[in-house]
Image (cartoon, rainbow, N blue to C red; front, side):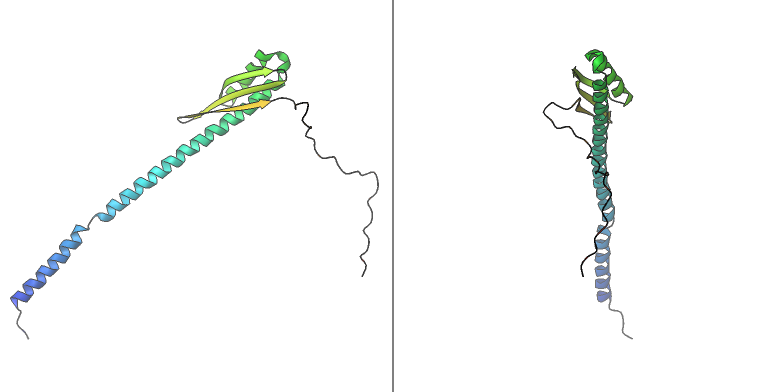
Length: 157
């Protein structure tokens, strides 16, 4: 058996201590990376939530504006004031408020605003009969059923 050389043993211990010190200096770096990743994910999630609220607000305002414009156009014969009052009532029932209303003849033009979270969106809608120069949109006419259908011909060989 060889005797232990104290100088060699000391140099091995110093090398081992250096490795341990280097390993200890990286300790906890994964925690920093995880915290940074969680912060980035929270920021992205917050942006997506805000975008969702904006879209929700826009859809609520559009639905309320459309229905309010139809209500005002439906009540045009009662006068502009009553037609706009009906439009405001319909907009309130949809959880929105009527910002602007104009009823000229059978045509109504309204703007409704809806809020979702900190965001408020305004949407404009117009309703009334088709313009005199516009073609009317009709459903296609059904095929003529007065004559009986023909029997299919046999294909030639």
